[in-house]
Length: 188
Image (tube, rainbow, N blue to C red; front, side):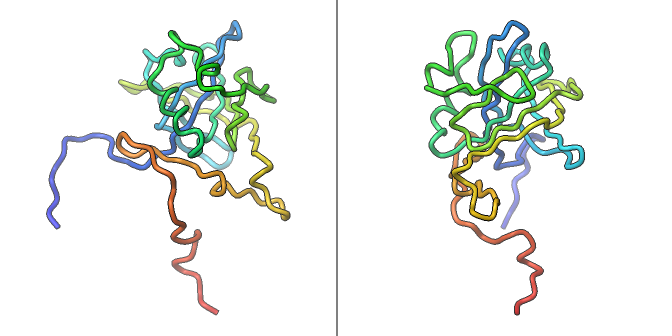
C-alpha cells in the first residue's frame, strides 16, 4: 500500500463530539459543539477543550472559568451539528434544539438533561496556541443518567449510543471489538 504525503495538519480522528454548555458572569448561557476535547490527566481528573477565540462561547469560558462537557448520542446528533454551526449570537440553541438546562452542582453553566454524562469543569489554565485556545480544566463533578447503570452500580455508556466526529462526519460507535486487555488475556 502506497502512502501519500499531506501537509502537516490534524488527522487524529475519530474524536468525541461533545456539547459544551457555558455561561457568562451575567448568567447568559450558550452551547457550543467541540470536537477537540479529551482527557489530559487522571489524578487530579482533568480534561481539555480547544476553542477558537472568535467563537461566541469563548469569552464566556474566559469570563467565568467554567463549563460543562455534555457527552452526545445518536439521538443528539442533529443538535450536536446545529450547536456547532449556529452561533449563540444569533439563536437560542437551548430553545431551537429543545434541550433542557439543569442546574449544575459546582459551576454556573447548566448541564444538558438529554446528555447521558455531564462533566462539570473549572478552568485551571488557558493556553493560547494560535487558531485555538486550550482550556485545561479540573473536573469538579460528574453526573450520569441512571438509565445506563446496572444492578451492580456499573455505568454502561455504550448503551446510550455515543457518537464521534471523523473528518467532517458524525458516526456511531458500531460493533464492540474487544475489551481493554483482551489482547493479553490468557484463555482458560
